[in-house]
Image (cartoon, rainbow, N blue to C red; front, side, top):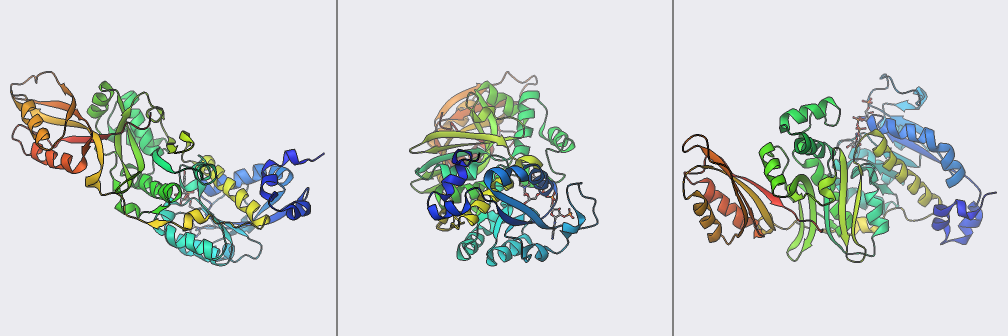
Amino acid sequence: MRGPSRYPIFLALVSASNQTWERRVGSTESLGVGIIGLGVVGGGIIDILNDRRDYFKSVRGIDLTVQKIAVRDVSKPRSAGVSSDLLTQNARDVIDHPDVQIVIEVMGGLDPAREYVLAALESGKDVVTANKALLAEHGDELFEAASTHNAGLAFEASVCGGIPIVRSIAQGLPANHVTSLFGILNGTTNYILTKMTDEGGNYADILKQAQDLGYAEADPTMDVDGTDAVQKLSILCRLAFGHSIPYRKMLCEGIEQVSPIDIVFARDLGYTIKLLGIAKPQSGGLEARVHPALVPTDTLLANIKNEFNAIEIVGNAAGPQVYTGKGAGASPTASAVVSDLLYQAELRIAGRQRINRQLVDVEAAEPLATEDIETSYYCRFTVQDTPGVLAHIANIFATHNISIARVIQEDRSETEGGSVPLIMTTHDAREKSMSAAREEIDALDVVTEASQIIRIERLND
Ligand SMILES: NC(=O)c1ccc[n+]([C@@H]2O[C@H](COP(=O)([O-])OP(=O)(O)OC[C@H]3O[C@@H](n4cnc5c(N)ncnc54)[C@H](OP(=O)(O)O)[C@@H]3O)[C@@H](O)[C@H]2O)c1
């Protein structure tokens, strides 16, 4: 016998309207789904829908039927779960299909994805997308269009794949002012840094290994230079802080310059190097930045390994929370898409507003200027092994009000006057002061290579 206890979410959705509940209890509603893109993620979506369709029907009361799928090339071989009758090379066949109420965009890229998503929203259809680049670039326009046409625009899969972070922030933390957010937002770079830390080896060799194993794209530029992470951070800033900040204005540095020697010194100092996305409200604006950072080795984020992602978020009421899981791949990403699909279907059936105003009523903002960031630093100077060098560098730091926390001086060079690394960490200092000091230090005759400076983040532990 079916009873309300078997329908917790359905119950919650309809509790605002007894009339809706009476009409729908025990019945099944049918909705048509169209998909644009049938690659890695699209294929994963088909697999999950084939696996869970009966469950969604019997337990959630929703029958989701795929009506049309657009691809670039219909002649490509497809998996057994897709009938060729469903395929088209014209995305308008999906968007304009009379039986499609929800369009899933998993083709990627900016154009024509933007045009297709807008067209679907303008015709009142809900859209589910995994496309972080599209939202980071055109979020303002797309969320506005969704609001104007009372259509849903759901994007769980665009940030950290399988981790339900969007839902957690939007539905789980509305009572909170978010006071900080730290994230390992890119699996490829986390895989590379983990291997460099745990097994040794240099960046280039491990990147090649990651490509061979399918953890890195043939062209990994957007991952390793931080672009992928900063696009995700800009989406999180909209959601968690109500700020629309162009991702190109955020400080963004990749992992290309992280060398094995820094990983070893960081470990000696009690830190692990991670590529972090960081967002914190400050009196001068929202600090929003992506760069490699030393994090204390005994923290949760330092121990998120390989292709896993994690987000540590602090709400003023809820306190600190950490979410972790797989940030990419067919199944984790498709899991997030299908969860959005089901949620949008439930809102549509319940006749509820499908766009969260929190995503539309945002403040256009600039990130806090990089020169105003205040943090502590790890510095590696390559210097001639001659007396007085340490005093010289300490003096430059002092003139810029930078106070030194720790110093590691390597053993003497085997060759008289050869180069040795000199490691220093600092207490909190302004980025502007650190840049000026670095410039002066690098100009010294005794400094033989450009210095390496990596920010230290103590997180919230
Ligand atoms: N892969 C992941 O792990 C992952 C994780 C999170 C988010 N995402 C996001 O998910 C989206 C899709 O990624 P993916 O890895 O699945 O990409 P993909 O494997 O390259 O698949 C892209 C699909 O889109 C189709 N397509 C391309 N241009 C088209 C057009 N003009 N009209 C119709 N169909 C078109 C392609 O058709 P053909 O099959 O005929 O070539 C292909 O089926 C991207 O926005 C990506 O950033 C991916």
